[in-house]
Image (tube, rainbow over all chains, first blue to last red; front, side, top):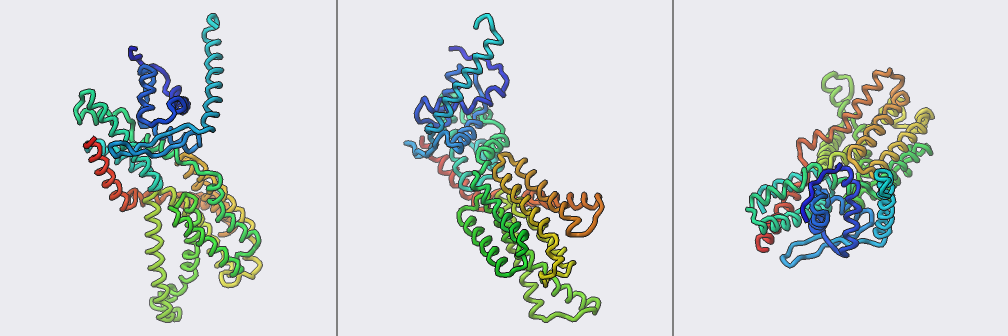
Length: 117
Length: 335
C-alpha cells in the first residue's frame, strides 16, 4: 500500500495514543515499544506518525495506571527489553474506550455526511 | 552506538528528575530502542552516522521526552499523598491541642518524625519522605535559634563590653554545633537538590513558618516558659497553617506536572506564612506583607539556583550511566 501523506491535527493522535497502544498490546499478546511503533506505522500506511520517544512515556503511564504490566526480558544478544502485556483491568478499559470511540465516530459521521448515514 | 546518540540520551537523562532506580529503567528502555532502530536503519543501507541522525530526529526533543516521562511517573498514590501530609498534620495537632510545650509529647513526636524519615531514607527516599525530612531539620533550627544567645553574648562582651563573656566550653560547644549543623544540613540539601530541586522546596516549606513562630515566642517571652497563657493565643492559627501545608503536601504528591507541584507548595507555603504575619509579627502594612510573601517565594525557589551550580544527578550516577553505556554499546556491536 502506498504511504499516505499525514495531514491531521496532532491533538487527534495525542488523545488516542494510549488507546492505540492498548489495542495493539491486547492483539499482539506480549510486545515491546519499538515493535508497537513499527506496527502503528505499517498498519496506518505511514499516515499516523509521531515522535517515537513519546511512546515510552505513554507505555509507562499505562503501566502505572494498571492497564498493562511490564517486565524485563533478556534477548539473545544479552540486551534487556521491556515487554508489555495487557491486564484484565486494561482489557475492561480498552473495551469501554473502543465502544466510546465507535459511538463518537458514528455520531461525527452522521453530522458530517448525513446523506450517507 | 555513536557519540551523537550518547549525547542525545545524556540530554534526556539530564532533564529526567526521577529517582535513580526508575531513571535506570527508563534509560535502559531507550537504549534498547536506539540499538534496534540503528540496526534497522543500517540494514536499509544507511551509514552509522546517517542512521544515528535519523534515529535522533525521529525520537523527539529531549526536554519534551523527559517531561512526558516525568509526568508518566509524576503522580503518587493516595497512600503516598497521605504519608506526605502526615507530619504536617502531626504538628497541627500539637498546636491545636496546645501540647507543643509539653516536652515528653514533643520528644515522642520528634522521635516519630525522625524514625519515619530514616525508614523513608532507607527505602530509597520516595517523594513523600521529603516532607518528613523537612521536619527532621526543625530541631536543628530550634536548637540553633535557642543557642544563638551564647555567641551573641560573646560578641557583645568582646566588642561592646556590655555582657559577660560566656564560658569557653559553652562557646566552643555552640560553635561546633553550628559548624556541624551547617555541614550536615548543606550536604543533605545539596543531595536533595541534585535529585530534584523542587523536592528541596517541598522539604524546606515548613521551616520559615517554624522560624517565624520561634521569633514570636521569643518576643512574647515564652521561649523558656511555654506556660505563659499568651504564648498559646495563636495555636489555632498555627494549626490551620500546618493543615494548609498538609493539603499542599498531598497535592504535591498527587499532581502530575512539575509546575503544578511547585505552585502548590510555593503558593500555599507563602500564603500561610503571610496569613500568620499579623499574628506572629504584629500589625504590618499590605506592602510589608507583600514583601514577606515575595521573600518566601524566593526562598522556596532558591533550590533552583543551587541546582544551576551543583547540577543534576548524584556523583555515583554518572559512573552507572557510563558503565551501562559501555555494556550496551559492546552488546550492540556484537549483535
